[in-house]
Length: 437
Image (tube, rainbow, N blue to C red; front, side, top):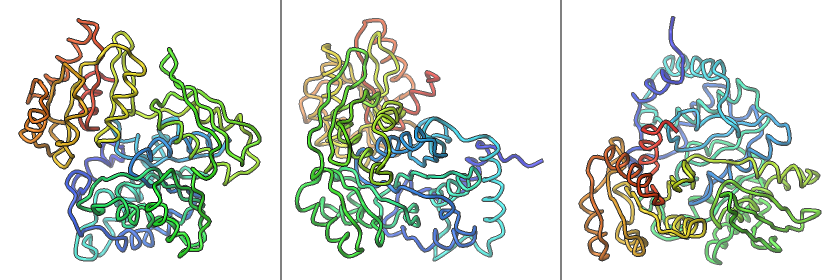
């Protein structure tokens, strides 16, 4: 009897071209995905959808939107990336996995359909891993009969596999320089790629952005005749406060709401207050009569692995996948707001990160260990060490990432020193596997 478990799905998927691990320029297009969706009878049209792009916060905003919709009793699917330990983190619900039988039925349908294709080379390249995972999410959500699917873009937007969706509403979170080799070397060029998710007559909600970036989104919305809502034009106030129980109280007011929203978030960081406002505005535009208390409960129930994830409070040990200048800076700021004691830091990053400008962010940290992000992600340890040396930082380099993780945690517990493990979701995955958390 053939095995259609998630483990078998992953093994099968790993035989396909994986740009998530090693992207290649000029190899992204939608033709393949459009063809596959046609073969499988347009599964992406079997539910209503929300499409979320952006450089930072798109995972958090997607989770918040899905949590609110689920709180409102809609059957809701959530498609997110990357997964840290369990593949079901990519394709599930706001509160966890789908049923085993749903995954199995979707994999059976996917495998049979792909094996029956006349060719697996479409438009001069093989079908990719991410295209198949995205297609699998459509099939799983169709099997589950979800009311809503919330989809986080993988890379960029315009040519991302998820962009075959024609959503009910689109969302664009804050933009920063990222994946410049593929998306462009200015904020405006990157915004142009993200704006590619804006569809004809489909409303779009956009996070705070500088004027030149706003102009890119506004121009695209004019072209597609799409109503556009810039969050900064609507937020009357947005405040936050960190609590001793490692939560964050937020309050914000928008004219679409009868009263200000007050809630406690488990997702930590000052930017999460604006993320919550962005998610709340999105859902309120979809459902103008939705009760404020329901939105508050949905936001409060949102959690996300690897985003300032606290795995110990004595001492405080935090896992955070921050890997850009802005996100690492905010993570360090959040840590200092929650804990007066300086943390030790275990840091690793992929080869394509801006190490030269990331290293100086750790100038106030006395205890730094550098390592590699694991065996599955390309890294550049020599460049990393050079960047920290040139920034005048003292550090220890440990090439054995397993030893680096174990020894950092053991030392933190022994000396009661707070610890931040950051720089790469791959490093976080290895940490969670070792600790079984």
